[in-house]
Length: 322
Image (cartoon, rainbow, N blue to C red; front, top):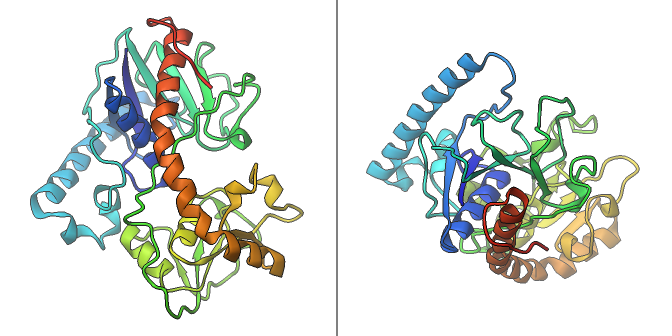
């Protein structure tokens, strides 16, 4: 059984999660690799145009990777177009330029993929965010669905509520280095870019598109990090860096609409109410221990996932999934 995991470079949290799965499967002895694609995965019509675009992307991707390898990461740290090629969280994933997909191959697509452009017989759809496609051509009837978190699950696709949650946080990068004075605010917008309550102007840096080391530097300077993306892991990264992390809930909602337990909201205030800010301050120190544990749990989660794939696609001995 082989795995091909479709992803972009490690510029965002979802791509880091996909690389984490690949790395854990590889460490377990599986033939697992990543297949890098351009940001637009929507492939329903104009397939020739899609593959021309993908070919051009692959050539540019290889060129960028070659430049970083030849001249070193330091030269490209402050270049946003190279962010996925430096500050890499998960290393050791094998890349396939053009993967060979046969009857023994399981292809893992994230929720951003419409269709099955690799024409795989065995397809896993990993809902890392809410399901965005509701037309009949998006998925096939034999696809296996798993959700990253229960809140992202679509019960019409995954009534069994299979959950595959794994994280990889580089705790040597994401950490507090400033234990002195802080001032000002920085902001996260990301998936909240369509919200109607966004301010017209921000009185601090919007860190979305900055290289990771620049994000960490700013998060170690500011007193507050305010996020309009209610689901990003950067709210917890802000807490790891010593920021008071404030998530702005949508109108009429509270933290319970976004988190399943107190542990999932460690270090985060949902709004500026004093009791919320007090919670963020008191629990900030618990975030690191939580992610140290979650980092270690990735191996077990990937082992269970491989067992699920064997069972579901009848590819070998029985496995388990929890």
